[in-house]
Each structure stands twice: as C-alpha cells, then as structure tokens.
Image (cartoon, rainbow, N blue to C red; front, side, top):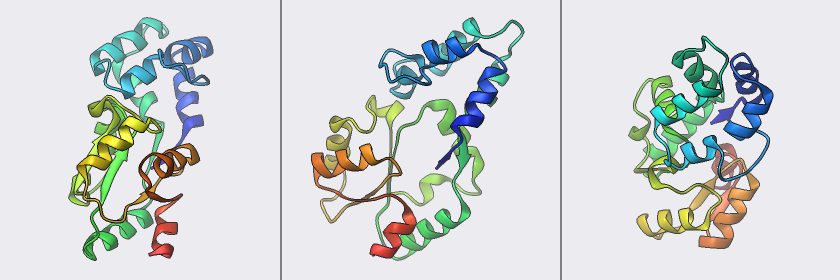
Length: 184
C-alpha cells in the first residue's frame, strides 16, 4: 500500500490545527496514547474516533470531511503489485495480509479494488481487529502461530517491521513484492 502522509496532513490541516494533529492524532510523535494509535489497535470505535476528531476540528467540519481527510493517507496499491500477487496466488503460494490499519482505512481500502482483497489472501490479520500492531513481537508471534510453518517471506516497506519479523519469528524478509518475485 502506498501512503500519502503529506496529502493526509494537508487535508487534516483544512479541518484541524497543527497542534491537534500532533497532540490528538499523533502525527509527528509515537506516543502510544494518541487517538491514531488507539484507533489502529481497535481501542476505540470509528464513532469514538470521529467524535474525538470533531471535538478538535474547526466549527462546521462534517464527519465526511474527517473521513475524506483521514483516507488521504492511503494512496492505493499499484496495479503491478496486484498483478504480482495474483501471479503468486495462481502458482499456489499461500498469501497472508498483516496490516497496521484502522476501520476507516480498511473500509476505504476494500472500496478501492475491483474484487474483494480477501480473494488473494488465505487469511488477513489487521491491527485494529487483533489489538496489536507491527513491530510488536506479540503480533508477529500470534500470526506465526496461525499460519503453516513452511518457509515464510514477509514483505514490508518499513525496515523496523522487517527486522522485528526476522528477530522474533525468523521470517525471511524483503521490502517489496517486486523484490520477493526476484528472490523466488
């Protein structure tokens, strides 16, 4: 998934102050008590998230404006990546999705593609459903226990997540599906 952090920040700045974007949502800090972090871990509902953002938003801001600004974070998955995933799937590789996401972003992601995402994946592990997020070792261990113990390749664009997967559960890692295709 490509992320458009700057686009999301620009959209959020239309409805909130920079201070609230940092302090409430947690952009620019990694504090575990931010609304973004709680939402990603399923510790607050979509309704709670929207109500909290609207409390700090400029007067007149609508829920839809919040959702639209929040969804600017996700810039989609390139068609080439989908094609590579389809090829891997057609060759009999078992595919799993492990994602740090929240309910709003997940619903948006599901709406972007021509067929259900779950079509390609044998199982989907989402942070907001599991109450854990990468690079938390507990998340990797929980996923590892639920998938067959064959050779596992973990693809993630964030080095911290790849290092955690290697250290914690011994998965092979690479930074992109393209890199994975080259290694297979």
